[in-house]
Image 1 (cartoon, helix red, strand yellow):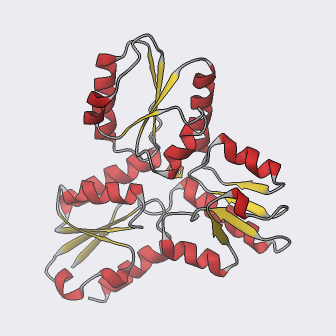
Image 2 (cartoon, helix red, strand yellow):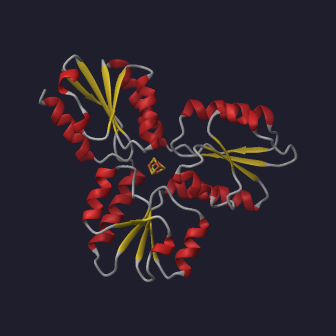
Image 3 (cartoon, helix red, strand yellow):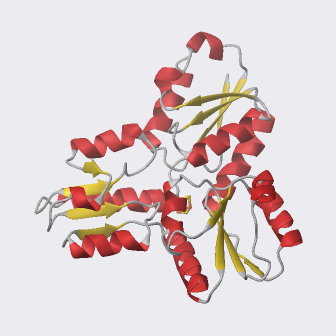
Amino acid sequence: MEIKIAKNAGFCFGVKRAMQMASDELDDKSTEVYSLGPLIHNKQAVSKYEEKGLKVVEEIENIPSNERVIIRSHGVGEIVYNEAENKSVKIVDTTCPYVKKIHKIVNDFYKKGYKIIIIGNKTHPEVVGINGWCENSAIVIKNVDDIDNIEFDKDAKYCVVSQTTVDIDNYEKIVEKLNSILKDTVMKNTICSATKERQLSAKNLAKEVDCMIVIGGKHSSNTQKLVNICKDLTNTFAIETKDELNKEELKNYKSIGITAGASTPDWIISEVIDFLESI
Ligand code: SF4
């Protein structure tokens, strides 16, 4: 059996940075450390941080004054910064710089009178956060067909941004259709290059192998996109850890490709490789 690993797989720059910052905060025991929601969409990695003392809450109001709160790499809306300040909760901001850039674009254009369109998933924390920089007024478009049900203001100016993990083909279809409908529009492709690289290397590898194993959280949007890309090209197994793999089933394949979402730690990928090598 040949095992091939995608050129770009696992933790991206933003997640690596956020996890390191969180780890440094947990080493400092002066006050408690909270995070607003799970740090990343990977429950095995989150459990490790909880063992080190991290407390996960959903709202700032659940955090006592003078403690610390980690804002995760997905980012949050403006109101969360104000709530933390009002409650004297110290912010440790691990928002990915690429997501911060989207917040700034959205806020600047919103203040200039533009209406905001976000290409992405309405309920994804990153999109919820971006929407929080234009007073939650954005139109969120997930698929090209959604556009048919939207009533656009023909006299308005629009600024279009995207969730960083959006599928490139889907993004292009939506932009093409928006361009054919709207006149005064600023298009900002804010898909992260880490996402594009992971998708492209997964695609290339899936064309070469008999089956693909995609490692990552079931709630990780970028992992699920990798799963869909691979599924179109070859037999694909989506797993969170090696425990979900079936030895007997995998013995049927001569070549196996491995990729992993941007929130999958290296140690989980290594465990999968070790398991395959043991077959
Ligand atoms: S995928 Fe890109 S935008 Fe998202 S955290 Fe990673 S580097 Fe940042």
